[in-house]
Image (cartoon, rainbow, N blue to C red; front, side):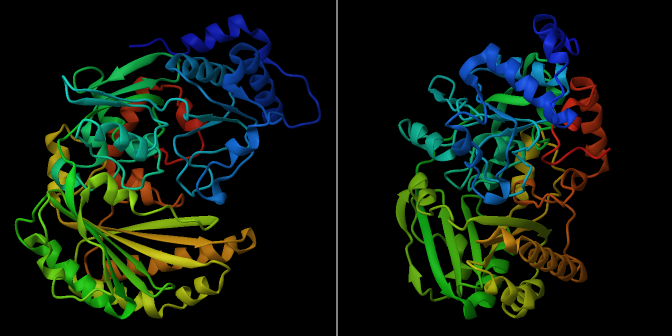
Length: 495
């Protein structure tokens, strides 16, 4: 095992002035962070971006939602694991808070950003390589899924990865991740065969099923609580050509679409090559069904419950999986927030959900905001996803092996002045959906981290046994709880 604080001590031996700072009228944390940024700039040069640099503003505004735009004391752009080691060692030695950003797709304000402290941006850690001999792909945490699929298309393989092309690799994997391949192979994290990670003491370890297996398990859903991951190695699969695409329905067809979904989810021996997502957009008056069949088979029997419906438009066809996913551009509204609910499929519950999304006063409140709209993403999860994860060595998520629905509410609006109203509306809707699921006896405690609001205690939802196991692993790899104390954003292990 590693020696705690080794590189942090070495940093102070080389740069003792980082232990102190001159009082200039700012708060002690501000001054400590500024002094450390200057020390890092002197040692690492262009790896560190200061507020006076031309590129600083653009880097602070790369996050998808403006709710996550902050003003870090400086920004670190490491290009190697060695860079990350030096940055982490300096921050630990000076007790300076920091945040870690992969793609910056979370709208939660501090999931991947910070004000007083250092933002570590992984944009330069974005390699995508493929080894045809082993069938393994190596990904940097700052890569976007579009670049990953583009690189792998050359070899006619893909992996269990993200469904939104501009999302970053790192955050999605460490939160568990959901893919159109998940019914076959589990959550996105379940296809990782190794994590290269910089620990709090500045050392680098490779966590696999054979080496540091406890850390390997913990990183599959453990978020930013154990270190800074600098590379992932992934299993790939020979899937390229598929059938599917989007079908659009009118809002009054929502009950029928959700009833078809219930039939689809409760059919015995579900076809694991069939996947879908439904987006319910009451403010826009539409329901969007996206079918993804992972073989080039037209209108497979798995989707039979939907074939009795008549869509307003139908764009299903043969294409590559990458083409299908890339057909959906990112949303452009300035500000976003979201919540997630989890429940088992239930016909009456789906009917009540349809009524709620049409008649709830919160829907009108949201529509009254400038550029205000709400989208409910209905994500069916098969028990085969859970079984596949267990077969690959397990993860920290604590999923029950039952068919379930991960329901994500996504709210967009334009103006910062409407933040309070927007957050109140979505929180109220989330609570009402939880109440409906609870009354139906369908509620499950798990919260999907990649769609969760900052107020939702995701890791606690993994179950007490997994929480205790995560605490024990944290004590081995980060006994000073650096990533609990100095990385305030993101989902934390309950204390």
